[in-house]
Structures are given as C-alpha cells and as structure tokens.
Amino acid sequence: MIRFDDVTKVYARGARPALDRVSVDIERGEFVFIVGASGSGKSTFLHLILREERPTGGRVYVAGRDLSRLSSWKVPQLRRGIGVVFQDFRLLPNKTVFDNVAFALQVIGEQRHTIRLRVPEVLELVGLDGKEKRLPEELSGGEQQRVAIARAMVNRPPILLADEPTGNLDPTTSLGITRLLDRIHRNGTTVVMATHDDEMVDELRKRVIELKTGEVVRDESRGAYGSERIA
Ligand SMILES: Nc1ncnc2c1ncn2[C@@H]1O[C@H](COP(=O)(O)OP(=O)(O)OP(=O)(O)O)[C@@H](O)[C@H]1O
Image (cartoon, rainbow, N blue to C red; front, side, top):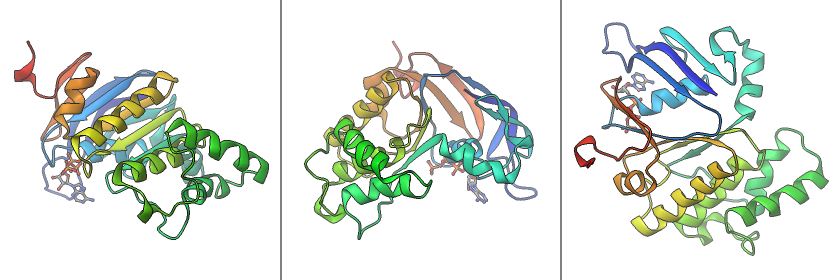
C-alpha cells in the first residue's frame, strides 16, 4: 500500500538528511507505529506519503502509484484517499461537530443526501452520536480528536495517517483514541501512526518502525515502544 524505496530527504543543502535511505513496505490493512525521538524524521515520513514534500533521492509509492511520476493535478486525488489526523485536532471552531465532518464531503462535491447519510454513520463509529450540534469548544480534548478522526474517515479513505494523535491527551483518553484507531484498522483501513506515546505502542503490540536521525533502526512486527523493553 505504501512503499519507500531507498528514500532520502534533505531539506536544506548541507543539512543532515531528515530521512536517510529509508526502505519500508507497508501492506494493505496493516497498522504501523512510527516511533523515534523528536527530529528523527517521523513527520517527514508522513509528509512524503501525502506528497507535501518530495524525496531528494529514492521513490515513494502509494497504492501502486509512483509519487515522483504523479502530475500535480492528480495530487488532490491522492490525498482524497488518505485521511489525516493531527495532534492539535485542527477543527473549525465556529462549526458544529456535524458541520466539521460534513465539510470534508462538501469540499469534494458530495451530494447533500450522501452527507446526511454518511456524517451520522461516521459519528456513531467514533462514539459521538448525540453530540452533532456541539461546537468544538464544548467538547473534551478526546472528543475533539474523535471529531477529527470522523472527518478524516468520512470519505472512507483506504489509508489513515495520524501524526501524534494522542499528544495533547491524558493517558486514559489516549487509550480510547488508540483503540478507536485500532477499530478503524480492523475495518480494513491501513493505519500509520507517528507517536511518542510509549503506553499506546506497548498496549497494542503492532508493527513498530523506529527512526533515529532519519534512519530505520528497527522494524518489528509486534514491537514495543523501546527495544530495551522487549522480553
Ligand atoms: N520544512 C522543513 N525545513 C527544514 N528542515 C526541516 C523541515 N521539516 C523538518 N525538518 C528537519 O528534519 C528533521 C526531521 O524532522 P521531522 O519533523 O520529520 O521529525 P519528527 O520525528 O516528526 O519530530 P517530532 O517528533 O518533534 O515531530 C529535523 O531535523 C527537522 O528540523
């Protein structure tokens, strides 16, 4: 589903690579944690999948498409197939829960009856039914993140990228969010989650790819957050 073939990313001439000859294959339907210290290249990894950045060397493939050969006018189509969730939720503050999620369908020109059907469906999936009319400020952090996940999933993308989705949440709330991402994964979505959240990684025991100064130093199928913690 996602393939990095010897990918290097250098942002500024002379700077140390943010990613250094990374080769990784993520199958359709996998759940993968990307871990590593701050600055190790996790966000860069996600930006390359979205073609928000382009590699300096090597190739990135998403759903069989070589992103280096993708015309600019096809980038929106690529991104439509990828839901994205961020640490800071990024909700529209003056729109209700329903409208925040509906907006993702409106911008791609979905019809009103599709929107009326899909939004309640996805809000139920994330456990927010009954809160459609609230504004983001009337929700807890965990609920706001659920809205963001609903917005990312309402278009039914085959891939979900999450960049530190539990970074602003307490441990109990984080666990709920991570379990929700796991449920989405079990429904068939390929999930890639960059995180510092050791408890989440240890709880779920999914594939773990660890980056260190841009290099893959570990890739385990049922990994823990830190390699030293593996029995
Ligand atoms: N737009 C940019 N321009 C220049 N350098 C950048 C840019 N984005 C990231 N970098 C550099 O690339 C390296 C990797 O950054 P990246 O954001 O991918 O790491 P990260 O693992 O996501 O970090 P964090 O956990 O703090 O979010 C860092 O040295 C960073 O300073």
